[in-house]
Length: 177
Image (cartoon, rainbow, N blue to C red; front, side, top):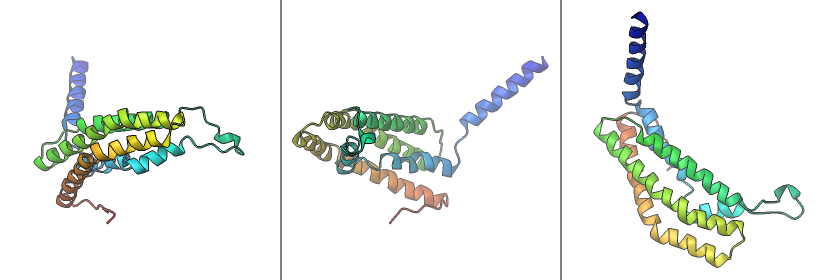
């Protein structure tokens, strides 16, 4: 009977801990600072990164490529974004400002994820197989035209709400003005 009571107390404490809201700084880190994981989303920047994954130098055998480096880079980015999104969704918050910030952060990550899975994966395949500059440029322009306005707006929403949240909770944040 005593063991059963101990087990019930332990489970109750685990449940209570799991249901608690995170501290303001931990919450802020997950929903705002984790957007740094996708700060390179801009087509020009991320496209350059993927191109660099495929660069070989004839006089440096260590740079010899297998042929899927850019694709692997995108796959890793997708995993990182999915993990961040999962962590954000699992946050338990009750404060109205925190709920709004959490929702905006989820919306941002959910907007970039399909682009990584589709357009950037296609771009990476073109990079790995040394596709034409025209094909690659067309994909980057598609992202710039179709996705960037919404994604920029989502970033702005997260940062606007994030600044107010940081101010309210006296979090020392350098916004890199």
